[in-house]
Image 1: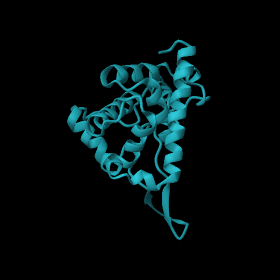
Image 2: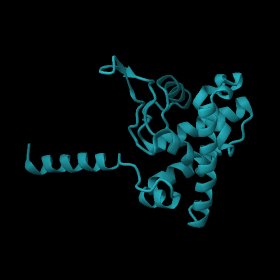
Image 3: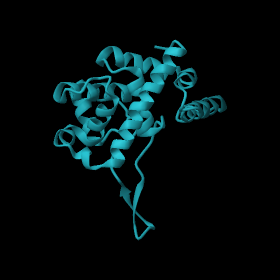
Image 4: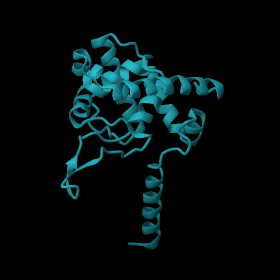
Length: 192
C-alpha cells in the first residue's frame, strides 16, 4: 500500500475520532452550535419534520448522552470485578434501546440509520416524541413530560411508573429547565 494512501486513511480515521468528542461548553447552546453546526442543521431538520423544538431536542440529548456520540450505559459487575454486560442496550446520542431503535428503523425504512450519527439520533427523538404526542397527548414543547415518556417508555408513562421515582422527576425538571435555558440562548444568538 502506498504511503499516501496509508496517510490518507490515518487522517480520515483521526478526523472521524475527533467528531466523537462532545462540544466543550454544554451549558451554552450558542457555543454548542458554533462548535458543531451539523448538530443545529440536524435538529432544525427534525423540528421541521416532526415539530419538536430544537431546544427540547438539545436538552434531551444533553441528559441522555452529554452529546457523546458513542455513549453507553455503565457496565454491571459480579463481585465488583467480573464484567457482566451493560445495564441496558442504550447507545449513542439518544441512548436509544436496541428494540426501540429497530422499531424506528423498520417504521421509517431507515435501515442504515446509526445511533451515533446526530442526524439519525435527532430524527429518532423526533419520531419518538411525535409518537408520544399522538399516543399520550404530550405537547412537543413539553420537555418534562416528553422526557418522562422517553425514559419510562410510553406504557410506563401511561401506568405512571415515573411517579414513584423522585430522582427521575428531579431529572425531568432539569431537562425542562435546560430546554428553557437553551431556547433563550438560541434566541439571543439568533440560531433558531
